[in-house]
Image (tube, rainbow, N blue to C red):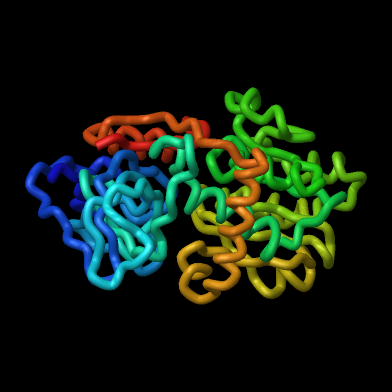
Length: 325
């Protein structure tokens, strides 16, 4: 089968299209899908650069999120049959950037009626990430204010819709070229501003926000800490797109008296499946209520995968990106 193979840890420029990858076979508790669309995520970049903790070593078939029809099921699988259109992630495996992919049966969710495979991308990555960070981890409630970084991305857009639905105010951060995509936010700030925290404090009468969804990392991490309310403010770290950042115990005692919470979707699925199940149940409730709508991804051909990842890496994209085999 055709697939994209990462041959080094030098980044997406070393992602190569191959035509002779073996078609995988499902294990007893797995399903095999014909990939109709694969999602592109920042974790793919982290893996390509070797910065993803315990990430794969090259050469490997890249990608971990895909949607399409089931073509075969393992011997122990019940409740799923060939022909069922599903979306899912294999957080402990790879191979989504290919014509066929194996998924754990428990991770394969039926695509909502009326949604295409491309529209369903994000349902098992971006939506649960946004909701878990806001609610069970971030404790967001009506009347509170949240600062959402990378608000024009797929997770940021979902987080904005969810936060507004639950009665929170949203301060969105993104580069100026993407501000037109952030009409649902209460306030929109330039993510590249050197006085971002000062602007947040001005908007909140000097007290800061109740919650920060921190996906930028790098120098923006300092602004996130400074933007949160003292003592009760929470900073949920959901990504490292802008690079690593340092936080010491001295910082927490003397500079930033805030609550810092680390988040990783794969760890949540593995170690707190009950919370993840509750999150996914709430995601489908929000879908049924029209709060979360089908994605509108920018679609690339499989062979153009390196271009798609390079665009994501340069922060030039808006919303979800997808590859079509």
